[in-house]
Image 1 (cartoon, rainbow over the protein chains, first blue to last red):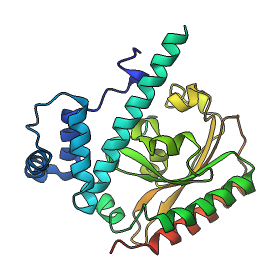
Image 2 (image 1 turned 120 degrees about the vertical axis):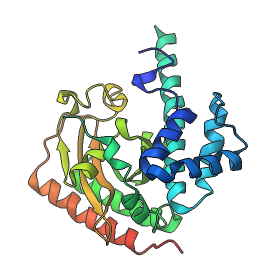
Image 3 (image 1 turned 180 degrees about the vertical axis):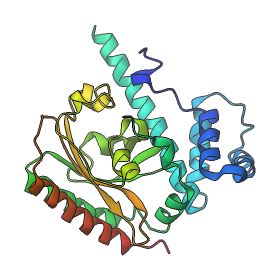
Length: 94
Length: 169
């Protein structure tokens, strides 16, 4: 485990978000993904943490099912940040 | 055996969940009361109502308001949550010592000393889909009795009923 991989959880990124959408929506996911990217002002190639937050915000403001999935994505982002901070604090204390 | 969290990405189940106003403040207040009752009756420090979404478990209410580790983040990723076990198995999940479970001994909440024992019961929507879990947790090892499980099951039925009274308009 490293401070970049707290408790074996990877930082959520757009690739993870897209894969989750594909699992949930199957063959209709591609169209939904493109619409969410457009509404979020994203290309899908962004790698910065803010891109995932913008996508999650767009999902939460969408239809009720996407809103639940977007809430889940935001929980993943917050959990990663919380665990990373905790792992860093432990490392600093050593 | 590891819980198959991939099975949680079920569009039919999520669509059924999305028919309810799960985070309505009035519903939250009702569920917090149920959580407080469960925690008091079982004399355990933490009780929660959790909605298991496709990739994460969202905390709908706890007995501690916003003072506990679940409420701080709003939930936890499904692979780090105990409640998916309840949804995937469609049955209660009871563990008196999570440090003895391969699936959970490296869980951050377990390693961090926040949770050692867990008991959760399914929350069932009127159409039969399982929304999540009503659960109790404690940082100490704990032997749950049949009477404990009956208490949690009764509270879970109350929580399911409360949720069903909040359709999304």
